[in-house]
Amino acid sequence: MKNEEYRNVWVFSEVKEVALELLSLGRQLADSLGVELGALALGNGAEAQASEYIAYGADRVYVGQHPALSRFSVEPYTDLIAGLAGQHRPEVLLIGATKRGKELAPRVATRLGTGCAADCISLTIEGESRALQVERVVYSGNALAMLTYRNRPQVATIPPGIFQRREREENRPGEIILAELPIREPRTRVREVREKEKGSVNIEAAEVVVSCGRGLNHPEDIQLIRELAELLGAEVGCSRPIAADLQWLSEDHWVGLSRHKVRPKLYIACGISGQIQHIAGIRDARIVLAINQDDAAPIFQSADYGIVGDLYQVIPALKEAYQRIVKRES
Ligand SMILES: Cc1cc2nc3c(=O)[nH]c(=O)nc-3n(C[C@H](O)[C@H](O)[C@H](O)COP(=O)(O)OP(=O)(O)OC[C@H]3O[C@@H](n4cnc5c(N)ncnc54)[C@H](O)[C@@H]3O)c2cc1C
Image (cartoon, rainbow, N blue to C red; front, side, top):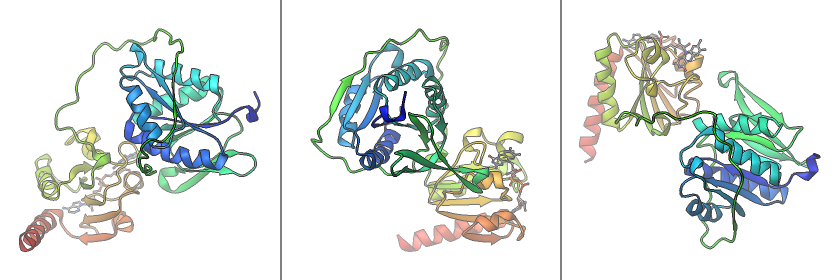
């Protein structure tokens, strides 16, 4: 099929917040291409979501409701999205780079015989060719790769939090279409679903993160980090050795290239050397404060503020100073 036979921009995320961000980006791309913006709402509550998507910029929403879609499962979701895209031929298909979206997007792209660019942070349309140009961070954040597509649809995944949602527009016109496509019997079966432990962290959404590394001497010293975090209303983060090797904290706390990328307003790195794999996870932090006893530690090159000193002395002093200021101002 020729590229010219594809038209319109589509977005999908199973997480509503991310879907709204994609609608904002999708709207910009659709306007610059002079086409419609479509969205996919699948699973429970999809119809109510569809009206929301219209209010946030979609012209048309395809609603898929089927018992197999009630809980996310990659096989039926792939069937439906690839089936609909094969039928309606969007030229751009944006999928939220959530854990599930990352599972889904390459499968959908493969099913459609096209490519998928992952974790795109900038997307523009190249003039006459109508081709999508995307940028993605590579080599642990040390370079930007720019890609474009030969085939259609052009599938890209977008990390949460990169684009801001638009203002909600009451009574915005749009069309809701019930998608009726056959869904195959999944080849995998969910045997058990266990709720995540209570109190588990969502470090990627935290506004303040106090993180620790191998500068800590004993597992019980994490209490020092917890106390500072509690005072600041922060989540506790850590470097890989703390979670993976020493297992003093669960992987939910692990920051860096191989786990969680954080984007807090404030990131406090305590006894973390600042190796590139850790820095890759904190590039989007607004302010980085590093505490390290080695003034040559690489973390200071990535920090906005640095305190050279023993964390066992610096953290209590910080806590005390913070409490003093809060008391004075209250
Ligand atoms: C493929 C790959 C992927 C990886 N992914 C990740 C990842 O996602 N996240 C990650 O974090 N790492 C990752 N790593 C590991 C990474 O390379 C580093 O080994 C790791 O980040 C180092 O952890 P650290 O800073 O806690 O420990 P160290 O490098 O040992 O640093 C400890 C620091 O604490 C300081 N210190 C010691 N005592 C004190 C004290 N009393 N007060 C103040 N400062 C003190 C020291 O000066 C030192 O700078 C990865 C590595 C590989 C090969």
